[in-house]
Length: 322
Image (cartoon, rainbow, N blue to C red; front, side, top):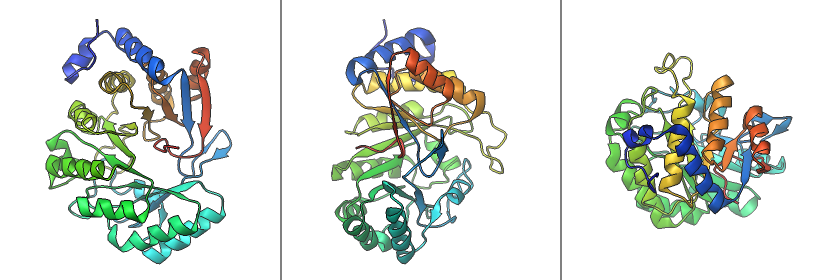
């Protein structure tokens, strides 16, 4: 008999994998139905279709933290808009092209915060003059700025949550540690905006460290969805030679998240390794009852059909709440 929730990673790995996944899947289907939502994020191309929710960096490729898992590489894939006029121009063009929305992100300063204040009026202008939805990847934030962003009209908030003090400092180089991260979660919760935490499995150089604590942190809030990210070691970063967590490890975490938060939709992010690892991860995630997958492997789609799942595709990031 499995408990309703699993408090530690040792407890999670102690259970038979098949039994754990079966329990999580049955719970997921009972609450959320036999459905799989698939997403094409950013401007990525999948099965001949292009995403309509581009990622925009408010700092171009600049980031003071220079985190060990990224080394500014991810920023280079975003549309640069390093000042308010540039953001207005970019959003006007993206709206004219028929995009559904934008994900505003960027690099952080030494305290882990993004430069939101100069962009507040432009964000308000975008909401009033275009049809774009606005998601933000917030970084560390205080209560006052969270409220100002809500008043500017943002639609939803994405935030990375790490449950290990050591990981926050060694990987993110974030001096505020867990205190700053918890304060940011509290600030966003107070706004009542749709809040979509992201937890990265294996962020500590491929090892599990703090993921269950991060899960407990987000479980204290009314969240719209949980996004599970998987460490994807990038070239020319301090983690380039580290193996990602095994697909079974990812599936165990998804199952644990489902048992801890039965009513919360769970998504598997586009941020995960490719190749055979992705195929195995996606198929196991389905067995764990995941509700959303960004650009699922073909083998997972076949498995979803065999499971009798209703499959729908969306040209947005997997965080998007309709």
